[in-house]
Image (tube, rainbow, N blue to C red; front, side, top):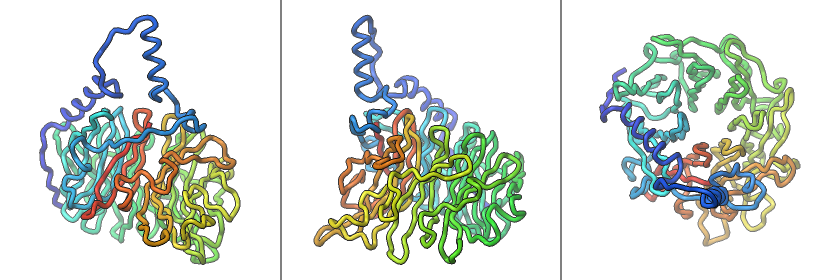
Length: 456
């Protein structure tokens, strides 16, 4: 496969520039150095605490203060896009080594930028773009201090590394990673126990480990042909590292067919097992559960999933926690008539929720607190009101009982959209510098643009 590697200067120099800016700004807003003594120093520290810069978000979780949100889009630009008229897709936000990375597809290029950690004047330093012939999607991971891209191009799977010394992308491994079948999305790339793992669906859930040079080694021996059981038709795919183990979750068809539930497998570096005694994760066995997100929090693994109600077309969002050999519900709403984290429950008579959807849900941990972000369509509002899809965000208050989760997006019918009259596409939250960053795409009238908002 041919790969064009444009050179945009020294990648190492760009990394160093970003790191220097972080040191100069102390990871916060840039301030002039001042000499603080005595009571002045005390008052300065108190002001930092009151501003939320020294908080662990306990005051937010308890409802004592609201999250302050502002745009982290490049100053003077409308979005991270190279061209606002070209759609951005398969967005990623990753915090690693004190830096925040953004990655996305736009046209045939995969673009990456590094944040300068200055919320008052946000800037993003471009890294070299990867021009893939026939590449349209994929995912990015930071491993061993370097960006890696796992992508689907010309019908096969490839992995590339951004070589900081060369300032260019290079293919790792020999040719395609897949087995010659038909790979399906989503793709996952995970840094685990000092190694890089590629996970994807190709009839079954597959996983290989990069062992250096040209070698990708299969590590999917739970059933001899993949991570999922031969009777399972897998949908969706998520992965997370917790307590030295790699967890892989996916939706699978279960009885009564064609209903679906979430299944979770565990990899310890050599062998596979099932999580939670192999119990399927589903609120109602007659529903469809095939999208989820996982995050380690407070010593446990949390899983957020989307469940499609049947026969009524309605989506609810639910949360569970792996508690040794069982899964415990942690969404604060335990009856079948409520809808978990959804902003608009089905019994809200102010909107018509019969066709409502909630999707692209994701969990992350920010400053010691568990946060969830998703997009939500509240169903058609009474005419003549339009109904754009909104960006929602909630914080776990540490109590599994109601309300359990509090909205930190303003708690209104409109969410965190740049323009609440336009719809949200993808959602990708990340914790960085004790703040919550949410990457998302939003339609601007011509194309989906990549935006970032920061909450603190």
